Image (cartoon, rainbow, N blue to C red; front, side, top):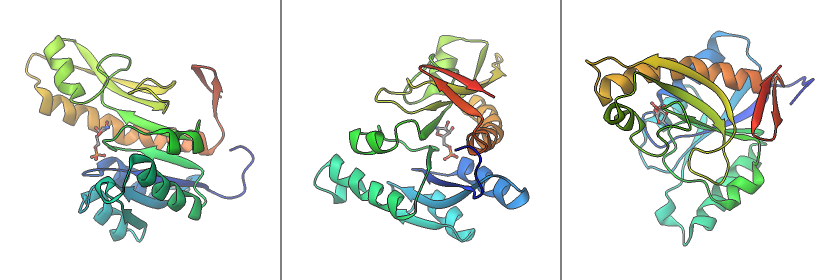
Length: 206
Ligand code: GRF
């Protein structure tokens, strides 16, 4: 992904609201960035992420896993779509599904995920609630490469946020999302510029 003449072709996979997708779209429209969102895919019919994409003239597909005989068949459909659009980087932004071998093998090192905690703390669902329950004073968000584990891949970037006594899971989630919207744009742009280097589990930003 270095010395490119064309923009990095990005796909966003999202299951829900898609506010992070929106941040990527807005940044792409506002600035002269090095990536372009070519396609949005959701696993949930009617997800807001899909209408956000279409409002910005980005192609969006809805593939519900229950419509396929197996997870591998579902992922093969997603993979065919990614390949059809010559996708180079897959961004999981609120994609509420564990990625299986079909997609992982095809996009190893080219798939990133956004998680609302400072990993490795609070993996899995309801991370802000987990942070509140644990009484931590600092939480945040993480962007990492996807591997076969649940939120276990090499960490690319993190942003911290202070947790106060007044916070609950909703207020903490809102604070974290604000940070996510900037971090996701920054990281996708860094990858597009070829500035993210992997050394095993350690990531160097050059
Ligand atoms: C984000 O908080 C992200 O960390 C988590 O899911 C949420 C998605 O939010 N994985 P949105 O759909 O982008 O608004």
